[in-house]
Image (cartoon, rainbow, N blue to C red; front, side, top):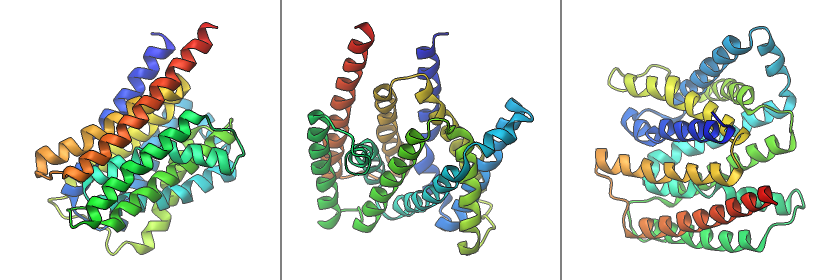
Length: 291
């Protein structure tokens, strides 16, 4: 199997595993801090066990290699994870996922204004279009729709937090995101533990929490961390857009949550702008490879 085919399979599998996440969170219907404890513990345990089985004694060195950057990722992940869970429980699923899809926009802004890197004019046009799309979604929430402005804002913070995490990983070239995310799970669990109103999970919610903690969160996180090692960033970003389509669709089909016209219009602008930008980036990458 070629590297490209391997990366495509890994990334697509990660997106498919991640797609029911919002639906499962809604079905579980437990406090955010409680769910964050179990999400973090599951991610740390499953990814940690996988690294031990794969690397043996070398797993300890992999964990040590992340250093302070791994701890920083853990703290930022905790903030983003809480905001994600809050957003899922307080606004439309489509609002949350369409806004989360804007993470590459925040990465570009960080690259320009924090790292001092040049940003292509095409990217600036994409940022403008995406902000218009978010504006349409927020307008729908403010205008008496089913959405909630605070929930929409929490999704923005989540997208920003993931952009910061990937920026740290890009700066630390020797940092493997897989053990870093296991450490992030530990940090999230420890920070959420004293804030959780309860740790017990109702019997009706147990199957959903088990899937979230042991399959969806660790599986999707590990696979999506590996994908960029084999695929161009534009390819990964394009495949990731699938989750913003499949996630709301599953919620719509199972919970009959219609996103509303403003959310659909804003989501179409966001996903369309990002897709066009990513396709252009992929075209440039392939031209550079040929040259």
